[in-house]
Length: 634
Image 1: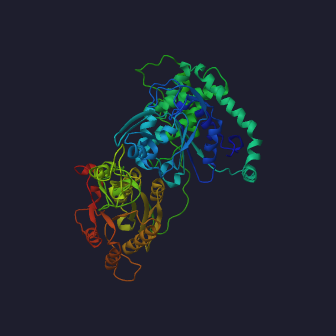
Image 2: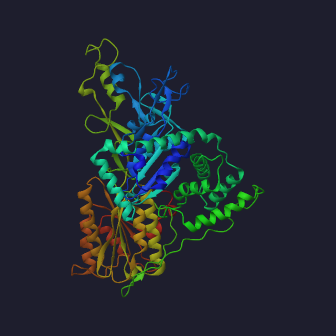
Image 3: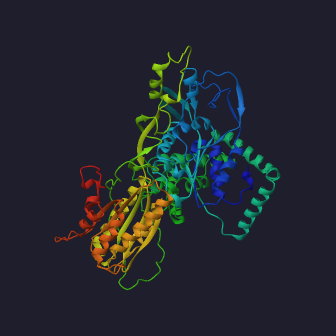
C-alpha cells in the first residue's frame, strides 16, 4: 500500500482525512476530482494510520468491550484489532451491504441465523465508496439510515437484527460522471476538490515517487515508515486531547454567524464546523478553539452545503469567505446577541463576478435569453418494463425492489418462502429424518422484482428564428432546465441536440453530468431557419450509438419545437422530410413539447407527434402543478 506520508500535495484532502481520524463524529469526507488524481490512493493509505481498537473478543461487529446492545452479547474477554477500511463496490447488492439470512444454516440446520454485511464490518472503521455518485439509490438509502442512526436495522426473510454501525464515510467521485444526491451529499461532513498540479516540479516528484514505489513497494514503504508512525502517534495524541479542548462562546458565535451568513440549510453545518474546528485545535495541540481553527473548518465543511440547485457550482468564493469571517468577528466579540435579534450577516453576500464573455455572433444569431424560473416537472416515462440501471423514472425488472412473483427461470436471488413452500410437501417422500430440508433443483424459485430504472433522456431543442422570440425561448429554456433537474433527481443520462440555420448539432453528447447540459444550454445560440428533419436525423444517430454502448438503457426523446420546418438538408420539401425523418424514431418513446404560442395555432407539433407515434403536450403542461398530480406522458 502506498504510504500516506509519501503523497505529494493535496494538503486539504490529507488534512480533512486526518481531522476525521481524530474526531470520527465530523461525518466523513467527500472527495471530488478529475480522474488520475490519487483520490483512492490517499484514502486507502489512511487505514494504516488509524489507532488500534479494543473490541469484545469473538464479536462479529467489533463492539466496544462491555457493550450491551450487540447481537452477540454478552461477551467475554477483550482483544485488540486494527481499524478496518471496508470498500463498498458500486455494484454491491443490498444483502452484501446490510447482511442477510444465513442460507446455509437455514437450509441445512433449520435455524435462522444472521450473516453480517459490510455495515457490520465497517463499524468503528472506514467505509470507503469509490465513485459514490454512481451508487445505486437503494444502497444510498441504506447508507443514509445507518449514518443517521449509527445503527443498522435488518428486517427481512424472518430475520430481525439491530447492530451498531458507526463508521467514517469516505466517498470519491468524478463530477463529470454525474452529481451526488443532495440527501447523501449533506451527510458528508467535509468536502475537498482535488486537481492535478500544474507545477512542473510537483508533477515531476509525483512521477518519481510512483515509479519508485512500483519498482520496490516494500522498500519504498520502509523508507516512509517513520513518517507514517509519527502521523499515527499524532492522531492518537490528538484523540486523547480532544475531550479537553474547549470551544469558547465567542468562537461558537463565530461559527453560528458564518453559517448563517452563507444561508446553509439546517443546523448540521454548524455542528460539523464546531467538531472540525475542535479536532483541528486538538491536532495543533492547542487547549481551545481559535479563529484559525474555525476558518479552516468552514473551508472544508461549507462548500457542498451552499448548493441550492444541482446546477450551482460548489465552492466558496475567497471574497465571500473573507466578508463572512469579518462579519462573524463582530458577533464573536459581542455576547449580547439574543434570539430576538435580526441575526448575523445583516447584508447580502456579494455575488461572484462573471468574467467577460468572448466570441462574436454570426449573422442572425442571438444569445439565448435568461431562462424562466424553473418548476417541478411532470413525470415523463418510457412505457413498458425495462431492464436498465436503477433509477427513478420508468418501470423495470431489477435485482432490487419489491418482489412481484417467483419464477423458475427469471429473477434475481432466491425466493425463500416459495422455495420452502414448494419443497415442504415432499420431505417425507424424500426420507427426511432430521432438521433441515432436503432440496432438489426443481424446488428452487427465483424472486422476480420490479423497481425503477434510469433512462437516456435526449433533448432535441428547436433553436431557430421562429422560436427565438424573447418570451418563448425563455419559457423553453426554463422548461428544459426543469426537465434537467428532474433527470438529475431520477439518475438519468442526458444529451442535448439543437437545430437551427442549416443543420443540427450535438450540443452535449449523452452524459450523466446534467450540470454540463445546463451549462451548454445557457450558451446556446438562436436564430435562422428550422431544419427539423436534420434535428430528428441527428437524434436518431445519437440513439444508435448509445444503443451499441448500452442496449439496456431505454431512451426517451423530448422534442421541443413549434413544428415549423422551413429548411432541410435532404433537398426536398422541409415538412415532408421532417415527417420521413420522424419515421426513424418509431420504436422510441417520444414526447413532443408544443412551443407554439398565440391565439392562432397551426398544430404542426401535433402532426410531428403523430408521425413519431408519441405524445404531444403543450409547453405549459410540463409543470406537475399544472396537472392534478404526476401523470404519465409517454
